[in-house]
Image (tube, rainbow, N blue to C red; front, side):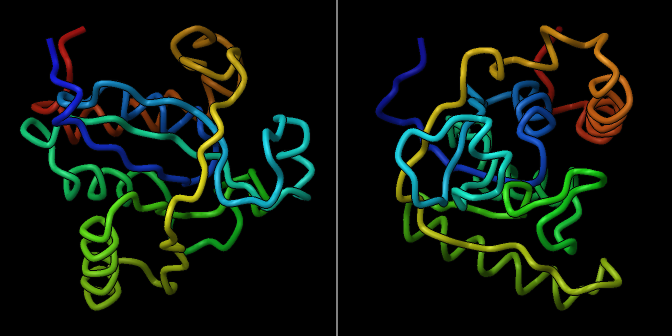
Length: 183
């Protein structure tokens, strides 16, 4: 039994939340990865409202993790491996502010670690273009509708899952093979 008192949370947006949830759900030490919305002005937004781009929310995944098994740094390293942090308000064909690259920190320590990593990544010039990842405090997380939870797991044969999510998950599993949950 995992002690909920030792768990930490972080909330990340890097394009479609189905992709992020599919990746983080496979990592040892991650107790839960929930798709949702954060960073906007409207209370209790719906998926349709988010997709309009009018609420200011990003599609995010809130990750509950055991820092004794996986560090916040490891979570961030995976985050920067699975999306392009240099494209403003888009990931691939998904375009709009709801797909922005964002780290919603839950603590000052997370904020500091995220800022330090961003500086390190910018200095390393891994990407040709500048990093546009936003680092903001988490104000409110709204869990997405039930049909968005475990979307890839439950809909793996859907075209979007086959074309977009499956290759991302496969690449991730190859790179992080020693850190994955047993299937």
